[in-house]
Length: 344
Image (cartoon, rainbow, N blue to C red; front, side, top):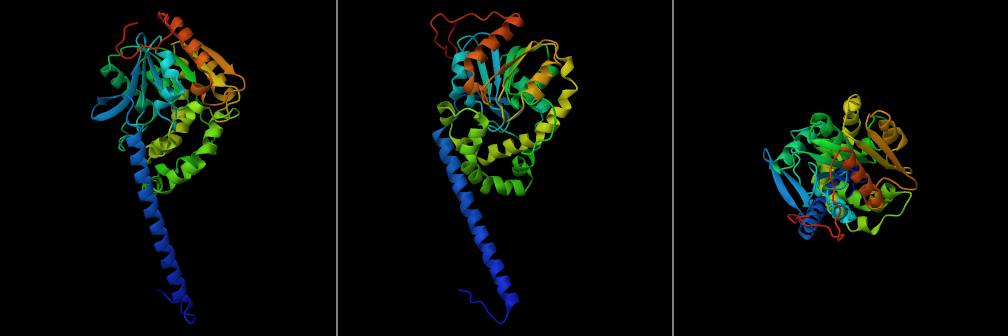
């Protein structure tokens, strides 16, 4: 027990600083242990839903279902490929397509080595390699939010393999984002490592209801999204990926925007007209005016998370993209979604 010396104010101040330091260290240690235990429990309760493919020692997790033309699904920031499964979109699309939903690097159960800057182009190169290993020579792309930048990079890199694209709620042009500096902090070396193993997951869990509300605003958060455990998105590994992509979003769009005019594949751009995360007019509508073979669908009254909100429109739009690409998409007469390996 320490007793303050009223005759020595300097010593008292030093003791208070030491006490504050010990309390802070104990608090961070407790937070670290809680985050570690909670992350392990969540992974145990929610093991990988799909399979893995190895590309040069990097392991990517993917969910595959259905038969037919290959359709690759790319998720946005914060969420994982499992978001497409929880929303029910994979099951619906698998009635007509061989659906491959991939956890992009660092998300879900996919690796994200720290010695690579995972720009849209870097991810596109990796995913092309992974899809070759999965026997997908050519494919349609359906991408949401941050994933649309990766889809565009894929089409620009190997246009002969990308047969058409449906881009949902995308961010395509660089511009000021007030949320980026805060969101990117856990990606800062050392300080970010400390944050993502201690306070960032706790703050993220506290803010999760507000975060989800903003993603779905002006509508309510649906039950399909509530089925996804928040702690899967708040594990330290995924917080690093989420923060890194917040930092890469503006420069990623800046690198790509000058190349958009060279795209020649059929593209449909879809966005919620009331999206409060990404302005549909400044991004989707603007990009549609640039692409030579593109269509624009703005959905009134809907927000950012279209995979949960507009499945009928998404299925119809990807079928139209496939038709414009010259693909034959037979309908399932029984309405059932085929499972991997089941013939149509």
